[in-house]
Every structure is written in C-alpha cells, then in structure tokens.
Amino acid sequence: MRYTGARNRISRREGIDLGLKTPGSKSHARLLRKINITPGQHGTKKKRKRSERGMQLREKQKLRYIFGVTEKQCKNYFKTAKEKTGNTAFYLAKFLEKRLDNIVYRLGFAPTRAAARQLVSHRHIKINDNVVSIASYQVQVGEKISFSSEKTIKIPYIEKQLSNKDMILPPWLERQAVVGKLIAEPNEELISKQINLRLVIEFYSR
Image (cartoon, rainbow, N blue to C red; front, side, top):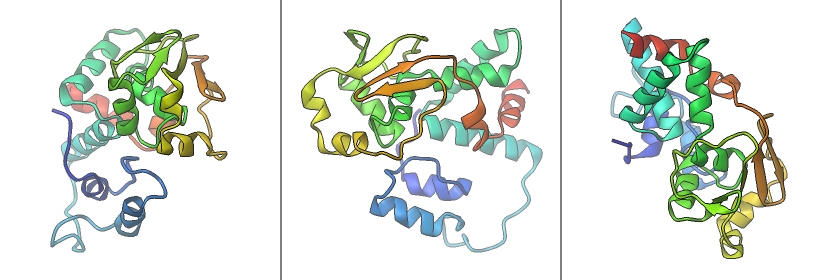
C-alpha cells in the first residue's frame, strides 16, 4: 500500500528531505527547520543504535517513499532486476528512474513525484502522440514526453515549474520548452546520493 500519511513526518524520521514537498512552500520550509529532529515527544533524545537489519529496512523504506511506490511494486522491481545479468542495484535504479511519473518530475514538469503521478493519472501527459495514464509505465529511450493539452500548461503551478531557470536535468534527459525526451538509459547516480542501494539489495536478498 502506498504511504498517504504526513509527509514531513517520514522525512524527519529518515533524517533527509525525501522530495515529498514542493520546494519553496511553507511546509517545505518547516521541514528543513526540523529535519534533524525525529518526530514524536522523544524526538530530541539520543537515538538507539540500529542493527544491520534495521539499517537495511530504513534504506528500503526511503527508496519506497522517494519514488512513491508500494512494497509490492518495489519488491517486483528488485525481482526483475535480480534476473538481469550484471549489477542488480543498477537495474533496480533504472526501472525506478524510467517510471513515467519520475520522468515527468525529473523533467521539471511537476514539483514533486506525487504531483507528477497525479498529472499522469488524470491524463495530462502524452508519450509521443498518445496519452498515457499509467504512472509506472516504463519510458523507452527515444520516446518524447509532453502535455496532452494547452490547458494543462496554463495550470498555475505548472506554469511556475516551467519558468524555473535553475532546473538541472539528469544526463539521460533533454527538454525543449514543454517537450522532454529520454535520450539514454538512466543509471543509479542520482539515487545513490540519497540511498545506499547495497543495503536495499541485501534486505530483499535475505
């Protein structure tokens, strides 16, 4: 089941910004002020040392929260990645990065992955010339991602996103105005800055 509870709470629990709140919003500012304080009445007390199993669990949970996937989806991505010849962590990262909702987010079309997922499910996104409403759709190299109508582009928060000049795209994506394209296979580089994928693999490999 996908997590639908308080988003700042889980970011504070993990001790990092999981990208669940719109940057620049009041809620995001509150998170940054309290990011190092664990939620709950004992949040300021010294934390107990985590076991190896506990650390693996926390990394797996962070991965789930960041990409907004269910436990079943995450486990299925791992199983598929494990069947591939080569680095399992690389393939796990690739499958997550190639999700349509993540691509929409990485292109700067939406402020969060949750917002990107909503755009997709509400039929606001096209792959090449076809509307796709499945957030988990695996975008293929060469496919173009755009909005399904001019009305969507006029939505205030999307207009604000598109006007962001500081947006830095991953090397596997390119964007011209309101059209993006996957130009190469993603790797684990961006995920590895936030998640220890080795621990995630160890968690599911037990």
